[in-house]
Length: 554
Image (tube, rainbow, N blue to C red; front, side, top):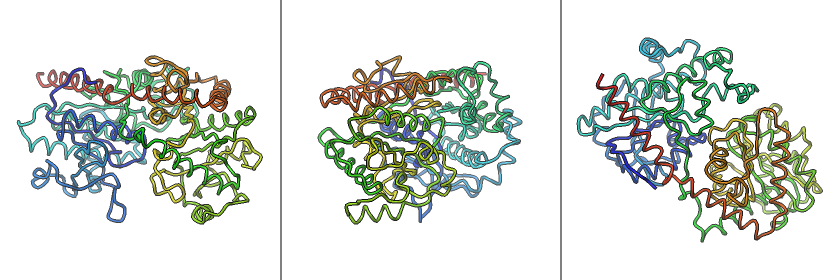
């Protein structure tokens, strides 16, 4: 619960994932919104990109009246920049400004030159999504400064909070053009740290030997790293989401975060206890029906153990390789139940499989497997997808006599995928266990979401959430609903064995034991509620104002 509060007249939070569900930051912001709104009401304004159209509207945004309507009528914004104001369709329904920023691309070269002169941001070798991120954050900064100017002296305690390197340019612009605004920057994962891991380099054993600037040149990450490092060092308050990432930031960005702001969760996303049984039954029906239609295997509810991994499709960083190897080990150990293992990560998906969709819609009882009965959708890169390649390499063929069945769901579960047509949260209610054996995981929302639904989870000591369990809760299924498996740069196969053994302990447990574990999982989630973790943000707001005040006196 909130221990103290800080007076905030306006709080802006800018992210590429406002009303734009593409990753874990969406979950951070959308679940935090309710608690922030309770504290500061409509003084909380989220700023996101307007990447939507009439033919493809955002399912998360509702264009309705807000306190910003009077500002919008008189707003002076750069030519071509337009905004829509409304509400985010999440608990708390906070005020949102969606910014159309296409016209800002033409100003990028001038912006890069200006930021080089003022702050030393090196955009010379920019490529890919760097230009898009800077165009958006440039427009977002213009919107924030316009709103600040509109309110004048009526609102003095103003914070502009920017998430991830993609909004770093916006922070620097606000600091330069609206110096009275306190700035906050949160890195949810350093761009260079993620790149080091993604390039198969060991991060942890050699962290103290890495120089961020040097590695950015080696990995062709100079522009992103320079922007992120500068935003971190220029912010009035710099935060990150876990202790393990704070160490990474200090080494690679050369600034220790002022405070760690761990990610909480909003219980409103979880079905009420009175509705959970129905939600679980509905989800399991969907999971088992899909598996039956795809494989021709007659999965029975009581004799099937459903285990899932999900999240961003980063094969090594998210531990997708370790999950599949762990399921291979379970295949050696399991003698009691059928194990149905789903890999639910969005890849380069093309379409839902027409043959699978037809079987599901016809309600026929399949007697034979469909061709390639390990995947629910077609891919654009079928022959080069890492997850599908590993499934075939490990010879998961999903025969009727196999005791472990692996199914790949390479799409976002947004209730419109063409096969399940349910959201991930709706599916999660029907799962028996989850596994997230991440190598690089600054926090780890997926295991937190899992325990919030009462589903036991396995994660690793390299995740921020795993570190939090080890330091602030108690490890072990019976204690917390979480099994934190030790993982290092050199313990891959030991970790695989430990994950397999953890899953086997759940498969072999009795109903009473599993009920105890599920209750422990929910208790853990309650300890990570935003009503508790928001205190870290309030402390960050206080630090931002203090730094702003010192800066303005100079």
